[in-house]
Picture 1 (tube, rainbow, N blue to C red):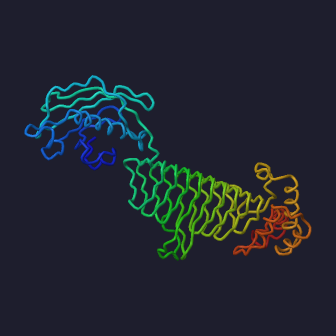
Picture 2: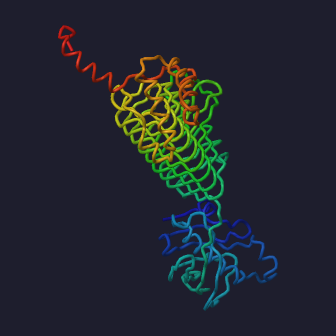
Length: 423
């Protein structure tokens, strides 16, 4: 592997007048490296070392050998974002002076590495003659700065916080903001006006902030906002919103599984689980702690309340109130999400009131407004009941799903008696 001066400067922090290698000719990551330096009279140290008899200082030859070792160490993916310090120098010998016009060839090999410490041996040659050689102890120190894989591309205007880890071949576009300790896997693409919080983990191939799949989108300067501690698995797509001033928002502590699609203007709460290959449509809203089973499809503008559970492969076309369990295509309400309530520590008395609310909504024959009025009148106004009422009384573009498994069973009994319908 050949590394030019631009790549060298991306790898090590040294700059003029202390960058002492011009090109890496050979590299085996973490094992061996060969580099060169062209020694010229223009270098500052020759003004005083020595006037009339210029000789390259031996300490600078040692430093140049060490810089080759630093490139070798830091080109390893496991060392990205670290800095290398000298820990010791042994058995150094200067065999011959180096003067302007010489071309130095440096050869460095790793002797051993134990945790953050290592030892290497190196030598400098001019015309195949050894001029300097020695052994070097070094220490790899985590600077806390962002780790960007050499193959990744980060736009100069992107704001990358400390501790961010950006993997191979990922592309971070202009105006993107990524919070502390967020990990971006290989082949990810983050574009647009995207803000990602702290300690998120993005797996391979995640795409965020690209234009929405919406004919109404006209290039509005909108944004995607993602909170903290989310896990976003392989090939998830999260799109920019459409419409002036829109946002696509994902909260905190969510788990979004492989190939799920979060389109324009969606709002996802906190501690939500979205299964693999789930397809949300635009403007979907999902409340805190809800679970969407794998391969489910959610219609645009649908709202799903807190701690609701949507079964795998379900087709959801209307709003699902908090704490309900739905399944099927089209989906039917099966009951309350008892297991989810138990896992989240919902008190028994609240669960009892939620069951009563379910009966008033789905088994009383009342419309949504009438059911809400009865809930207000007959049930204790615990926080969970207030959440159900707030959901029912909020304006809905899709309406509240009222189809239940009980109705489906009735349909199954009725339809066979009407053969003329051709069903």
